[in-house]
Image (cartoon, rainbow, N blue to C red; front, top):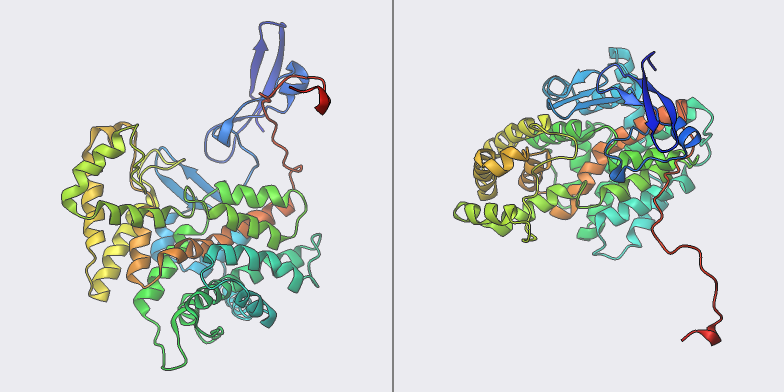
Length: 430
């Protein structure tokens, strides 16, 4: 809160109200509108919450106009180049980068919470063989409260942190189990001698018939992708987690709700949609035709992976992930026609006046699907990969909410239905 005030006046009534200005450490000044309904008798209307702050947070800062993304003050570019996913996880949960001893303890905690109750594996086997992995993930994560309720004291900070670590540790195990159920493969248990991403890849792809050697290229690529997807301020799924958390619900229910929100094609499912779009375009020769279709308001076709709700500049994660896609393909010794198509499409769009005017730049989803495809991840699992990474952000925001709870979320509405009318008995209706 600052000493600055903005006066909002209603000419029809002659009333006015002073709106305090809230200024964060960075970002635009924000008006506190809590006094408007009581003083002026109005509520505010903001569909999609495009101009409304629902909370204060110290976790992630975004400047969409300048293309800035920082976790706890650290630029995403520095973390992507120098850090690891678990170090970033510690940072998001605790606010500071860990000292060596702190990191070792955190690593140990995550490693030894990777197992899930065996009945959860039985639960997963109860899903139909072709169930979407995100449907299984939402169901299984929501059920964790039934298995790990003995230390679920919401008022105890240590118990809350334990729940957060459990979810970070168990999410890859659950994701791999969902994939293997879909494939008809036996359950693969976590190996504690492996690192976070190596362990996940082993659970995903190892088979009893032969030894599985984890690819260093794949492990590094996943670690980078997980860092880039770990948090992104008050996006749809994170704000869902905080909204559910405001009811006092347990953290597993909150994260299950976040998974369901992430599943939407406008959110976490966007990288799968990008790959489908590239396959639809088919070849570089077809790009001009599809670019024109994207510019036609009457044509349902849209260029997926361009533009962002927040960024009005190049998504800082997109350039990092584009370079990573090249590195992965080069190190694997493979070429992907979709990568060549994506590169050409990016260049055409960046030079087109329509995209320049509307500031539609490639976002993080544009290249991530290509990396997942190169590493053998099926499209149905793309959003699951996102959920593994974003779990860190979800639990960090849940912990922050628990430390500084907001009132239960209760958006208002503009009612546009019928005015009051009298009930007419069935026998008297025409």
